[in-house]
Image 1: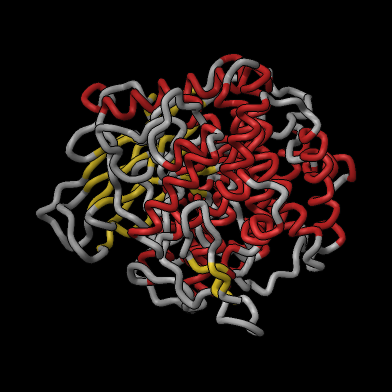
Image 2 (image 1 turned 180 degrees about the horizontal axis):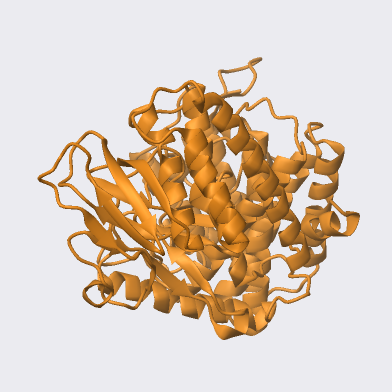
Length: 566
């Protein structure tokens, strides 16, 4: 990688040229994985077209239409399938019979022939009675069943005909597969009892046009094991397009067209996104802003992200930025050994309820540097926004804590140290940005609150002379207060609300009342510790309690003093 491109990525941002380099790295990796897989499949017994012959069809199609071949090779679903089947070959994953999963290469060959306009004749796997055509849609041939069956797919000038050998009573099914815009109702899109096309989200002309798949059908669209199709209804798909349009317009204000420029952290070139996978069935009432209930990426699927539909365009824009950072870092990790990670989950991440290993911590630092930049841009768009001021202040201090942990771990390689040092420089520059004092105070309180509760839930101290250790098992907990503190309240009532409002004496009193009834509640105890530290910032006992809350037992007396267990 040229030095200047690594330097761009180390800031948390990157130019289109840097992203193109990452894609070339992913392309090389895919070819290596395909070569490895084909070697392993040579000895696999299969009722389908042998892998070597299916690969020959793909190669012939790629020679006839190179762009179509590249598109198929770099498709996120191709990477997910490759990673999953190779893990299965090592006994590290599970799924349908191996011959059926390996036979997905035959389905890829069908798609390659369709896009190139070449001919093909292949025995293909029918999962749930359907042939899944990656990037195009789903062709239902038989009524669904629990076991995979064998179909025969013929391709001629873009048309696919699928029959079932040995089942003369089953009529062949024909279609000319193509995707449709997300706003097209299924009834008007050629969908029917046999053919279900994939939908696409349109990219605006300002971003160069094109489309992004809204994939609710591909079995390899999730993080590892194959999943069933889960079709969005027409109204839901249309809502996705509306939110996507609004999110990209929000990002465009600061990113511009992204052509030839270095996009700073928090900005996004929309064309870099390849697939959005809607997670699960969206509830009739999405969570309130700025929540996104679920989002995730896989290192095997560059440019794809799994997202549950958010309640607002701002939340979707933030999620697109966040998840694409994970794709970028995964691609970097395929090129560089950035960290010597023994996978011990013992590190604090301010956005997680559980301890993390170093690679997870690095992913969080890279993603949340961009999230911080995203909120910095929102604050520049609307300097009076208390929400933008709060999230910018919160994420910059939380992410800087994680960067400091990584730099002090002694486990970063030379490229890893350079990358993390670049993130540190970005964040240190932002720490000098002025922020509304009220929003800044709430952000600092929220950061202290999360860290305190995390330590109470995940660490345990066994008494004098003992060392603090991780709990062998900690129940998961939902961090609702980080987001609840984003908006100021005119008339606080609860202990948390008084804490967010900066009325620390009232907060201490109310937390103490709650602890008198439920002394073992970590959320309440954390609030009490943070409120006391804010009320008496110069006292040694409150500073020590804030630094090592796990040393205390929750027995406050009035404004009181907690008993020390070690």
